[in-house]
Amino acid sequence: MVEVLVDTAVRGSIIALLAVGLTLIQGTLRFANVAHVEFATLGGYSAVALTGAGLGLLLSSALGVALVAVLAVVLYRLLFRRLLRSGPMIALIGSLALAIVIRATLQLLYGSRPRYLPTPLERGIDFHGALITPSQIRLVCISLGLLALLALVLKFTSLGRAVRAVAANPELADVSGLNRGRVVDIVWMLSAGLAAVSGILLSIDSAVGIELGFNLLLPVFAAAIVGGLGSIAGAVIAAYALACAESLVLQIDWGAIVGGTHHLEVGYRPAVGFALLVVMLAFRPQGLMGRAVRRG
Amino acid sequence: MSIELRGVTAGYVQDVPVVRNIDMHVPTKAIATVIGPNGSGKSTLLRSVVGQTPQTTGSIVVDGAEVRGVSAHRRVIEHRVAFVPQVANVFGPLTVMENLEVGGARVPRKQQRRRISELLDTYPDLAAKRRIRAESLSGGQRQLLALARALMTSPTTLLLDEPSAGLSPAMMDSMFDAVRNTRDLHDVTVLLVEQNAVQSLEISDFGVVLVAGELAMHGPARDILSDPTVGRLYLGAA
Ligand SMILES: Nc1ncnc2c1ncn2[C@@H]1O[C@H](COP(=O)(O)OP(=O)(O)OP(=O)(O)O)[C@@H](O)[C@H]1O
Ligand SMILES: [Mg+2]
View 1 (cartoon, rainbow over the protein chains, first blue to last red):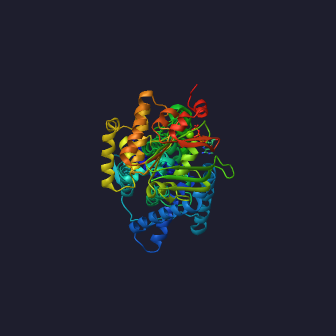
View 2 (cartoon, rainbow over the protein chains, first blue to last red):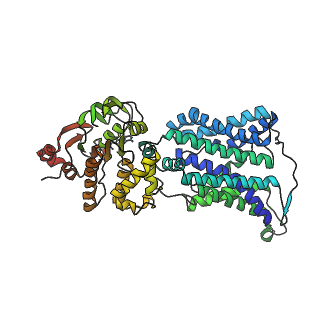
View 3 (cartoon, rainbow over the protein chains, first blue to last red):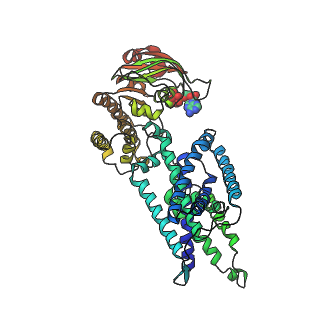
């Protein structure tokens, strides 16, 4: 059971960092960015490229996050802002296309073999019977720290109020004198930055491959939707709940039901998110923390 | 400090004008009421003054400055226009205090603090609810908050779209008082759209009748009030 806890903390953190960004973009622009998870992949490869160029891991990570954040704003300005003029559905399809282009480009540049970041070999720590590595502890702490920081910024700063105002009522935000374009730019930077952090943390913990982000697409969307699109707290809670459910489903010995000992293969993991999503959409379509009516 | 429209045509889709060829003038510190049937383009007219509806021709001059082509948020900040829309006129999930802070997001911090305390003094109903989310306010408090939020920037031009909609008769009276007091205290020019035409015209200096996107009549509020045709059609007179 301790393993479930460790698993939940690690995978939940990765999903949460991505889901909050997705939900922020959805909240402010009313469109689901399928390419969001690719920012995680790009984060991982940026760190690979920069460490490959001789920079230290920490500096490479920081620069990688900044690069991805800037790229996100450029993509928004050049691509998504135009697409959004034709509606959220067009923007969604555009983001799907962008995701494919990003993966194809990375494939071309780096091949399909996974890459590893130059992390020092560290000994795992025995935590009540479960093995936990220092990099996993760092992953969880950094994630929780960033999520807490995001929550504080949104709640207590004027930038945070502006983001919430734009999400609640974009037209009213305009006539309140807020520069909506600038607020949206910052939301893209924050969202993509957090996604890149998530990708780099995951790359340090294991490796970075072309499919790093794509493999997270379903759980991240599930967490954002189950949490109630636009709700940060909802997305975080749903991310950890989903990770916990995934871990439990894989750990449980289904033998009690089907006879013998029987564990599900890891390939079934995405099914958990899917099941949770379906159940949620059927019984509470506005999500955990969502409002039936958001505008007003 | 005045609003001047010359030949203004505006609409949402190209080649489908909703308001056509509007000429009107609201002098400094006057109150003008726009009345007209549903769908005649009253909201569209107001939205084109603040820059939320694309304007195709004509000129809009606010306080002596042409604002054509200027974005909505710049009209609010640089030309000191304030606008309260007909629906969704507060930030629902934000508290009363946060609504005011967002309204004053672009004014210096000290001035913002001072303005908030002034407005909360003026509207004690809101002061009592400052930590409450706007979406859980009563209809009257909501309209007051919408007005107060718009006043955060110390505007010289105030555009109100049906501020008395959905209010009880008592609350309606206090809303019209609030509009008149705002003009008297804060030196603003007010252009408002109202369904409660008689009450609104009574506090107004000028009246504008909009029918099917065109100006049907424009003159002193007193004249509009006593006009027999207007009375029969829009003021509910016998
Ligand atoms: N966002 C919009 N996009 C397209 N057409 C619109 C939009 N808003 C309003 N219209 C159309 O413009 C016309 C005028 O609408 P407007 O809201 O300005 O009228 P109004 O006089 O304010 O009506 P009401 O008394 O119901 O508030 C209507 O035919 C309406 O359908
Ligand atoms: Mg209207």
